[in-house]
Length: 309
Image (cartoon, rainbow, N blue to C red; front, side, top):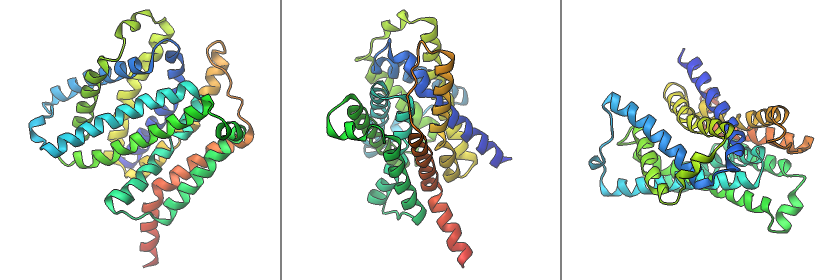
């Protein structure tokens, strides 16, 4: 039952995160990236804060020593950077491209663990990383020349998404140490609350009063996506193996492509077809395969060595 629960929670996370960039397209036309991120952080802070208060598990900062407080600052800046840079990239690229590129984040985290924690990459993890890089080249096969020959909007979008992946990886490396003294939900609450306060100075909350019903619905979905998506992810990590959860979440680009196709069909006045060729779709699937292999690599390597013995 735990395996099935982990499977469905992981699948829910993949679907939610896959649909997210499509919904974001509707909001980006009206709100700036800082205001969108502030609204999502504020919504998540309230929801998670109420849950922790009900459980009487609100975190106490005095339990953190000075070193872990600095780590918390780095985690906040890392996740904020990821959210903001992702939206900048989405504004310059299409949803399928952003969701495909962001799959590089777990690979960067893997190499970060090698450098900072002295971990070793299993053979399948190396293969997964190479497949992911190959998949990205195939995905952008139609635009490789323009991306690398001139500073275009797509070039800036690609750089922004790579920076978002790096920022998330920094957050991922730091949170490992913070989770030694905080639960995952307590840590996310502190990050959401700090992000809400920091972004308030640079956001424009009054702009929320001028959205259409469709834009309000899209923003509400983005806010719920943050709470439910990360909530399902956290619970899946608790009841299932982390490698299998990560492998399932790697399917997110597939759900983005499907969601975008449906959005173009249902609301052509708001969405435009990305005009991807067959090789680009092969590239997206190769990225998914590479990300899944990298996630399952160490587990598969351990199992292979055990069977050999």
